[in-house]
Structure formats: C-alpha cells, structure tokens
Length: 274
Image (cartoon, rainbow, N blue to C red; front, side, top):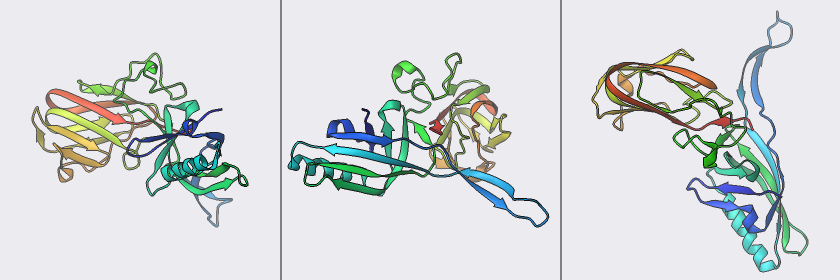
C-alpha cells in the first residue's frame, strides 16, 4: 500500500499512513484541452482556433479504519478539517514524492460502514492549473541525492544545469512539459549590477525585456512574474512592458546594457503533465 501527503499553504502536512487511512485509488488522468473551433460556410468541417490546457479532475478513494468509535470520530474530523477550506492544498503521491498537485476538493464523501469505526472516503481533487509541479525550485540543489528530484522529471544527467550566471550569454533549462508564461506560473528573474538600458533577451522565444533607466552595482532589478521591481519599487512605466517566457528545454539568453560585473538568477518550479 502507498500513502498520500496533504500539504497546506503554510507548509503543515497530513500523512494518510499515520492516520489509519489506506489509499484505494489515486490515479491522475492524462491532460485534457479546451479547444476553440469555428464553422465557416465555405469550409468543410470545423477550423481549429487553438487549445488551452483544461483543469484536471482526479478521483480518489480512501479507507479509514480505527479500533474503536472514539478514535474514528477523531481521525475522521481531523482529515476533513485538514483538507477542507477556501485555499488550495497540495496532494503528494508517496510513489512520486518530488511533485505535487495544487487542488481543491469537490464532492467530499465520508460513508461510515454501518456502525463500525471505519468509512469509505471519496471525492474529486480539482487541479485548476491542469499540471503538477515540482516540490523544489531552481534555487534548490539540482542533484538526485538531495531527494528533491527524481526520475521522470526531465532532468538530464550529462548536462551542466545552472540558474545563476555572471556572464552576458547563458542558457536556462526548463524541465517542464509546458511553456512557462509568467502570467500563469511563478517566475522570478533577478539581476544585480550596474546597467544602462538593461535588456534581457530570450533568443529562443524571440522575446526581450528592457529597463530604460540606470542601475548601480548594489541595485537589484527583479521581474516577479509580470511585475518589474527596482529594489522592491514598481518601475513598470520605465520598462518595455513586455514579458519573458521559457520554452520547454534549453533557452538561450543574451544580456545587453550591463556596464559592470553582474549576477542574474532564475527562480521557478517545473510543471508536468503527470
């Protein structure tokens, strides 16, 4: 048997193995897509206008078994209290401990077995973003020995993968199955150093972002998703008002406008279909 781990936004965890709960079913289905199609009188069939990843619905079945009724009431209430609420929680499959699904529970059912201190617990985990995500980020050590990463996460063994650089040209590896658009997924790009008209360009996507002002050696420019900050203050009006995306795989970057020693880092998670 295997267990599930539930994690709240504050980092607190609930382990089914430690609470008399067996997992009968937890098998995320494959991804589904929402496709816009139009019909035109002069065309056969329909015209595909593009697709977006749909939400993921993951049915689950658990079994709670206790030795006496008082314990049953306690364990039942603890479980329902932990997984319920208005915020998303994360569910982690012990068989693949290095990824998590951000979910809310719909249709939670607790069916007691007659008068016995046991119950079937079921429902559906709804993952709005449609993909799982790595527990670790690119600022954690990228070694399997840390137990933060595992097989199946698209981590190449033979490549030198880094996310902090001191040069004007470098490559950033996105191990995700999906494109990272900072409007949807958290992505932080942080630059420290002197510059005048700093431009960060992803040559793989053809995108670039520019800050039209100047920075000192101690200043920090941060692209926090779609929010450009200089030492914590919003400088959106002094930028090109553009975005930087990361395609799956390698992304080639060029920095221009830097006028001295620099440091730039990329901080994000990886996202997976399964």
